[in-house]
Length: 105
Image 1: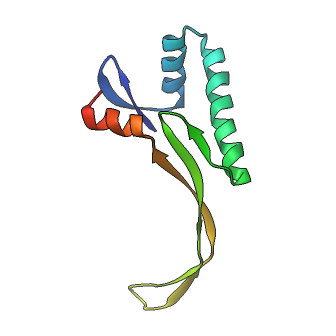
Image 2 (image 1 turned 90 degrees about the vertical axis):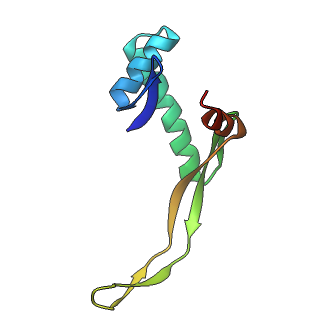
């Protein structure tokens, strides 16, 4: 779910609601807005799968973090558990987004 603002009121929305918001704000049909959102998200996903950083100026940077394998311990049984290496997505907000959030814009 994504938190966006409708008429100044913040609320959790799903993909369908986000498509409606894009359609309304950009004066598009819902199908055009859905295609635009899908193309945007697919572009980010494709870049991340390739291992690229995806930067949206003024918004932030999406990247992939490589986590090393590690050994954890089950607190109940004390048994050691091996956790393999994995790649995880990460997001770092840009200066403008960080500033907007701090100032409540």
